Image 1: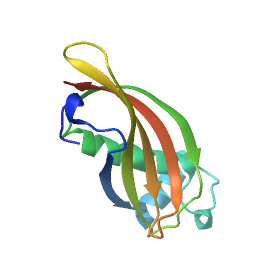
Image 2: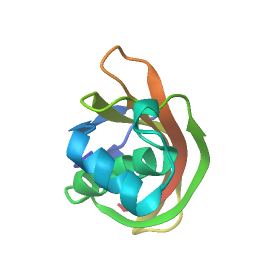
Image 3: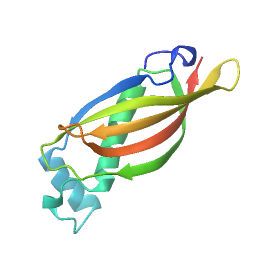
Length: 130
């Protein structure tokens, strides 16, 4: 999405990259933030959200996104096991100019597992430079 607000298209799909559910990171996350969560259940919801945040933040470094206004409609579909590689994508659902220098982009973000099944999704509203 290295494009200004005016060049972003409705329905555009952008890759957010890939990230494995690292076995050591999963164990450390459970110990620190989800005590009592059984390792055999896979990554807890909070870790999945943290993984999406990492992919999203790394992707946005290259974009003319100036501010995240909101993250809504969070949905968790499954808890991937250690070793699973998750792939992130963003789909532009709407956009609205809010002045000469900026606009708001509404997007759906998804994390998919190796089989293409939905793991996590959310909606975002972000300010992009024009």
